[in-house]
Each structure stands twice: as structure tokens, then as C-alpha cells.
Length: 351
Image (cartoon, rainbow, N blue to C red; front, side, top):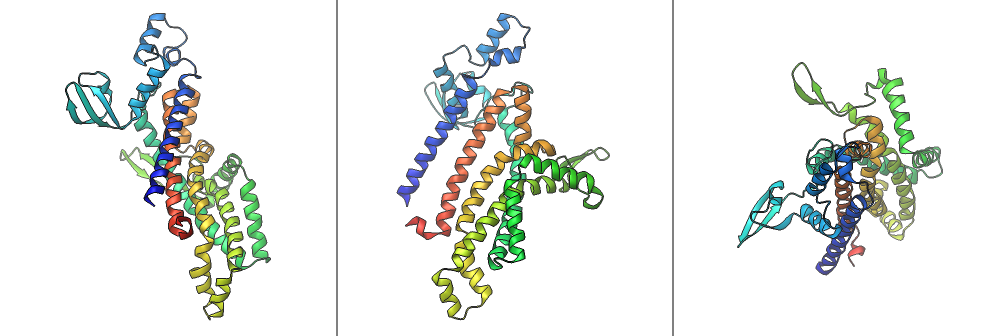
């Protein structure tokens, strides 16, 4: 078990290094000149040279890549009087002669537009995306498992046909179209009945008391919109898996022993039927974070999608690099946790 875990960690480290190399070369080799973007079209040569020197653009690509690795690494080594160490939020671990070892927060640079640190900017918006994705996944899981179980128990009935219609519609419905449709229908046309705002973020400012408060109504429509497609997929998976499990020999044995119908369903069939659903749910958390971009933009939800669209419009490369890097590492960690969870549910995977 420890040997498999060690191999998995080596594999994950290799994937993360591949993401780092891809992000660096995509935005440092193939992108436009950042110095020109910062200085503007009408600038002198000396200003461009100063900006390139400050951003290390005057150095070879391989040396800039080493600087980038030093910036994003949580552990690094520096000369004691180096000016580069001052830009980090770090804790000194030890010192040997003129070399100091530090633990630090990964440094992703500063935004070209606001001069804020990209790490804090991305994390502040990551909270909004995670909040939206978790609630959407919670809605999708509950709805999908319940709908799929009912469809399998009442196979070839009007209820089963209605649930299959829901799954087909939900799978084929694009997220951008669903966002526009649901925002218009429940946020504008039926707002007198739903009392749900069409756009906005849950954190609101009260000008009378000069305080912030949370209005959770803003979360309902974007979470519902984002959760429709995974709910439909989970329902379809749950239906087919449950039908297959109910035909197994051990289910017939349990019924022959006199166990009740509810006991057979929840104690024997449901757990085994959840195996493909667990894989889908864990993978969908990563997909929901990426798929939330359209939903966040249409509902004006302050998450990574909203931040990324703004950075694309302004060609803010450090912010784009930070978003891509953090999302890539986040996806890798989710896949790793999925493997561990799958082994916990199904002991055959460990064997």
C-alpha cells in the first residue's frame, strides 16, 4: 500500500511539473511582450528596458524559468542580502554562511492592472468558485442519486420516462444557454414569486450601517444552473448501475433470507451501485470549477471565472498564469483524493 502511494505521489509530482512548464512557456514564450503591455504603445526605449529588467525579461528563457520555479516553490534558498527575498512572505528556517533557507508562500507575481499580489487575488476569488461548485455538486448529487434510484425501482413506468427525459435534457443543455434561460425565467419573469435576484454575489454592502452581510438568495440560481448537467449524468449513471446491481445473486439471496425491500435497497444494493457515481461526483467537482466560468460571468458571480474573463480582456498575464496553475494543481489533488475515496468504498481496488 505504501509503495503504491509513493508511486502515486511521484506521478502527481511529475504532472504538476508538466503543468508548471506548460504555464510558463505558454505565457512567457508565445505571449505578447509584457513590458509593452505595461508601458503602453507610446513609450520610450529606456522605460521598456527598465520594465524588462524589473520583470527579468532581459535574461535568457532558461534563467527566467529558474526564477519562476524559485517564486512558486514553498521552499527556496537565497543569498542572505539578496533583494529578491524581500518580495516574499517568508519565514527563515536557517542560515549557513551567506545562504539562508526559507519557507514561503508561493509568489505568483503582481497584477499588471492593480499591482496586487496574484496569490491573494486568486485565493479571494477561489473562495467564490469553490462555494458555488460545492453547493452545485451537493444539489446534483442529492438530486441525481434520488432520481436514478427511483427510476431503477420503477423501471418502464411514467416516472422512469420523466426522469429519463430530465437526464436527456440536462445532458444536452449547454451551460451558457441554461444560465441565460434560468436567469431570465426565475430572476426576471417570475421574480415576484421566487424573490431570487438574477445577478450578484452573496456578500452585500449595507450603506446605512456601513457593514457587509450575506444574502444567500444570490447563490440559488447559479448553483442550480451549474448543477443541472451533473445531476442529469449522475441520475443516468445511478439508474443503470442500480438496475445492474439489483440483478446480482447476492441481492436475490438477501431477498430469499427474508430481508425487507427497504433493507435490501439501502444496506446491500445502494452502496455497491454508488461506485461509478462516486467517481463521477469526484471528477465533476474539478469539472464544475472549470465549467463555472460561463455561469459566473452571466450571473456576475465573483469567482475565478469572473476574474479570468477580466484578466483576458486586460491581457493581465500574471493573473492568468496564477489561475491556470492553481486550477491545475487543484485538479491533480482532487484526482488523488478520488483514488483514495474509491479504494475506501470498494476494497477490490486495493487488491
